[in-house]
Length: 232
Image (cartoon, rainbow, N blue to C red; front, top):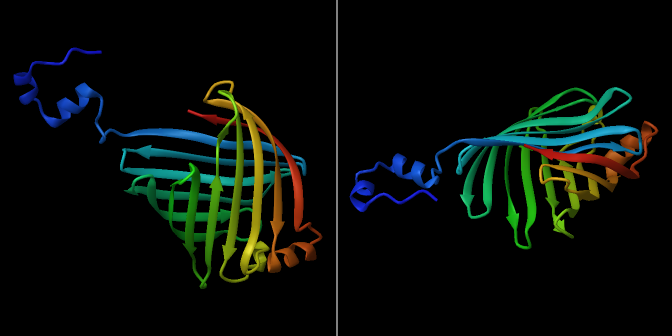
């Protein structure tokens, strides 16, 4: 540990000098890239979920993306660019834009939501979206990291998507469209690198299920997954 300067020297130091000496400058910018899921699924799909952020302790710029590809064709996928601001202990406000691509025509949305740590250490995200033609949507996600040992981590996750009106071109009904419930078990070779296996159950509801069946697709499916989680 570096020696503490005499009081008369510290009194003459600027806030920037003091923060640099104590390594406590909350205005410093830093970033992280997390590939939460990069996996193969038993229905022959490859899927991803990743995010990156850059900024200080109070304000950050976030980039999020998720989707899947099957036989070289991108299915349902999205990317979001969000500004993130701490508004309360453990909770952030997020606002920005989202673009859906893959199946059907691309859709652009404005986004406003919150993300944080709920009691019990559950990671929670809740986001509302608005688009043209009177379209609206909501997305809710919750997950939890259960530390079985210092290296084995069990991660349950649930995600629900709701839409204000039908969008048959993207195979979406109004109301609760789909629910994904997953359970993944990972082994952290290092904190930054962890292969995993798991199960994911996907269920389409109401109009979304009807549109899927009309195209010969299943509205309810249980899949085995295997992948890797990486961050740097």
